[in-house]
Length: 286
Image 1: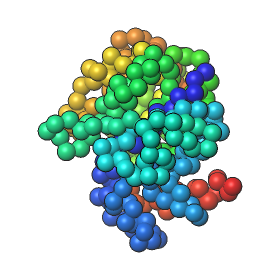
Image 2 (image 1 turned 60 degrees about the vertical axis):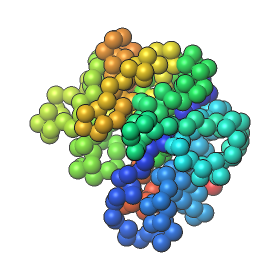
Image 3 (image 1 turned 45 degrees about the vertical axis):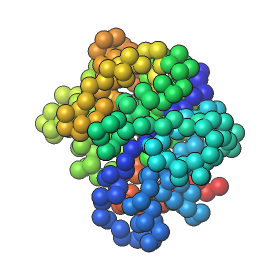
């Protein structure tokens, strides 16, 4: 079992800022959505950042050390969660910051694979340890977080049943499909499959499986693939699923899928804010 959690919060939040749906949102909520990281947008009755709720779930799942990967202009995180690089406190957990620096010649961060690589380089001990890594704008459940923490495989991920996700079918159809073998090890990731193609990728139980970007990884295993991650030609970013898939192609049965059937609240565009507020009202009454 491990107690390290790395949360990727250094993205530019471009889709949130560029989205236009503002129905039922206050002026403050719209301003926050247009000006800061998605993870810091206030939701719930007391307008706590979505990241608070993810951290609360992480604490309940047994994590002790949380590494927040923030951007070069991540002062808002430090003002809210503590201004020291290391050993800030959130409830019973210790918080550390890693900064995702933007390479010369770029205006935006270089993707999630680059974010994790920079975190491991700034905290070299993680290169020899096991950790969970996830997005900052998905509200993963206590059960999902705990299942990765106590999992005994070297590397694993939550393999979500696509039918359990409560998004629109248009949105779900854009999700990449995880192709697993009969023992639930990852074989391939299929980006933007057509409707006709999807039936080919059902698992042994007839389910379509997707990743919501939450993984348990061994630093020693993944580090070389982060270093050598190719750039996605369409998005011009180095993406973590690419590095993980390259690991799996080199080392068969490197990543075990843990089947889950539940929704994962997501904060991608402004229209998600109202949905997430309702979810938090129903699930975080305390």
